[in-house]
Length: 457
Image (cartoon, rainbow, N blue to C red; front, side, top):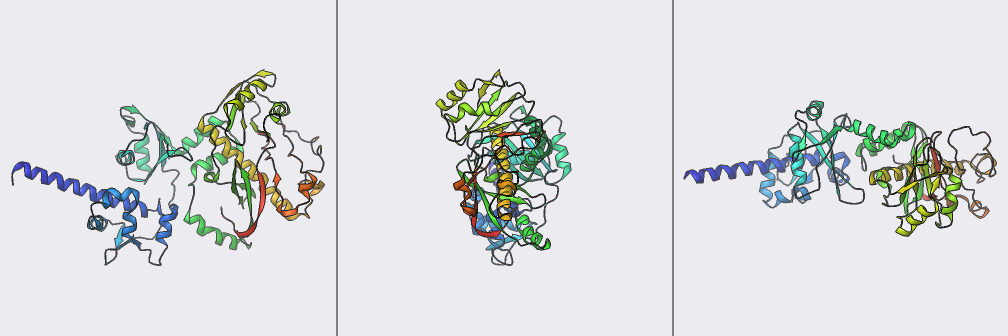
């Protein structure tokens, strides 16, 4: 064999070995503690039989395996047999984990945020994975995308296998960079704190925001397994009526946080409608919501939802759908001042609008669950005073409210609505906390579902 032929053979062998490693790592990721219990489809395959065997043919058909699968089933089989984390059956047809599944610990602490990767291009996922592997073993690398779209945000969340790798990445010298540009890097916890500070959130609102960022979204096999036993341990029936609310044109489920009795929605369930929010700036730290809503009633069928934090120079106004140009112009022309100050109207940044809509949905969920429980525990008259225990009529309870931030009372229900019992649809307005003003009557309608099934969290 000539020198050139020998060199080519060595290159081919090296490429083949690299491909085997890449294929093995990809399948190991599918079955890893950091992915398997959070991937509903993989979990369904994993639990399809008592021995947890999964067909290799099925795994090979996954999108990330296609480049490997074209090399044939024997190639995939060779790759899997080199793994210490997986095992293959005697026929070479199925694969499974070699160890019992363990609930991951300290995922949040072992995760980092990095931004500055530009636009997505073919092969970027693999390049990013290889990039982070230079700092330590990576359990998962998730490219962040715009909700409801596939557009890459240019940032990622990365879960390292240990804290040493996290420190190596965050403390790297020189700083981590991509295509010659230094990246913005921080721990995932620091990212949460940054976003909370940007929004000026405090108290419960800050806790909700941190939970929405830090927690794993979507399916969670551990949570699914824990719920039934938790309900049984508490001596309570796990069957509860489902509560839904209509929000931004979608019907979404309201869940009950059993520990504090507060309704909430899952972040992934909240529909994001870009362009359905306007931001006003320049109000001087206060806002009169009655004055703001008056001109809006003339144009919009449902009064917009207004959120404002006492002392801020800005606020947000949420509508039920994306605004057209003429509707935006109407708001600008007819609501030029707030708190006697001339304000500037803009469309908020996408991330800010997304957070606002999630906050809005969670406030609505709290009120929705509360009212559902009131109706269930009363004779249908809405509690004391006929309106959820607030003491009755339209002006009841206003005299003893001493919070710095004023609130609009929820819109009264018409007599015809109050006659329809449990099946009625009811317009609700979520109340803010003592330091948060939330306005607008056009918030989601809620309804009690007919069927009853196990509550999920």
